[in-house]
Length: 153
Image 1 (cartoon, rainbow, N blue to C red):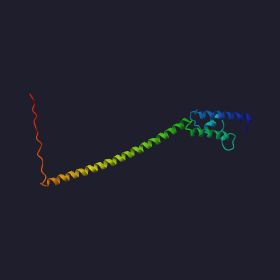
Image 2 (image 1 turned 180 degrees about the vertical axis):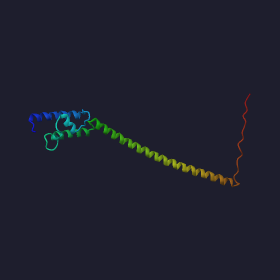
Image 3 (image 1 turned 90 degrees about the vertical axis):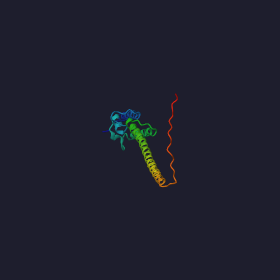
Image 4 (image 1 turned 180 degrees about the horizontal axis):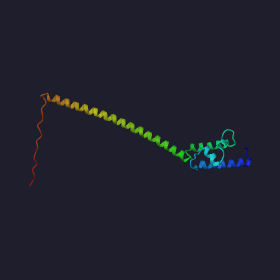
């Protein structure tokens, strides 16, 4: 079905108005900032935006404007913004988790080394005590004297 020039102009105006609303972040419930939602909002058949159809140039303009907004960090679709934020948060949490795992590994290695050193030192002490008990050159010190402290009256 052919449309008149006036109808085509009216459709283009509706598409441009819907495009502006979507790019401002006025996304309808259940919609996204995409061609499908643009077509629904402008009450135009979605296939009219593709190939050599009459509104392909408006689809290209919409996609360029959307891409330009995304490049400067603005995401008009709240769902897409939330997804981007959650992905960034997820990446940060993965980095923190990796750092924590590395710290745990380092501390576990340190603990193992410390326990090995303590065991070696204990073995050395036991060996020295045994060798000291077997020699007569070692003299034992007398036990410390205990003194009774009197009270002044």
